[in-house]
Image 1: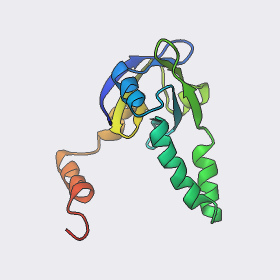
Image 2: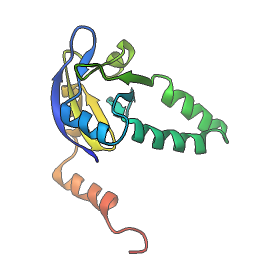
Image 3: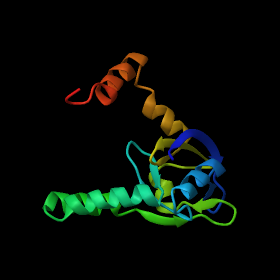
Image 4: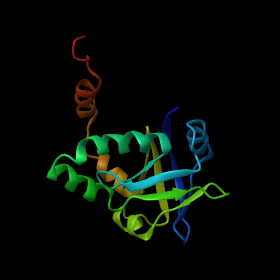
Length: 152
């Protein structure tokens, strides 16, 4: 099961945001929807990983980090603001204040399903992040990302 689509959601005074039911159900089907790992992402968003996605990322970090000073430094910096968040009985998670500030979140967030993770964006920040890319840029990026596999 994958996470796809987007939803705009309100953030309450306590930093709680409702995870849409279809995303929670996808996580439940992936065995372990009761918690997520919430951490800084890239380009100004937060990443919300279910148990399966977190375990895959954790394994890659384990394999690569211990053997070099650069790998250890990356692991420390990358994970310093990671939080395990539990889904409450109303389907909400609480975004810690430090992550609210890092992502410039206010009263609303945009949740973007990106296959194995959900990105949490301040709506205007998301718009700024994608604004520079023209349809031609996206076509060229698709060629790089989705073109023939090596050996094809």
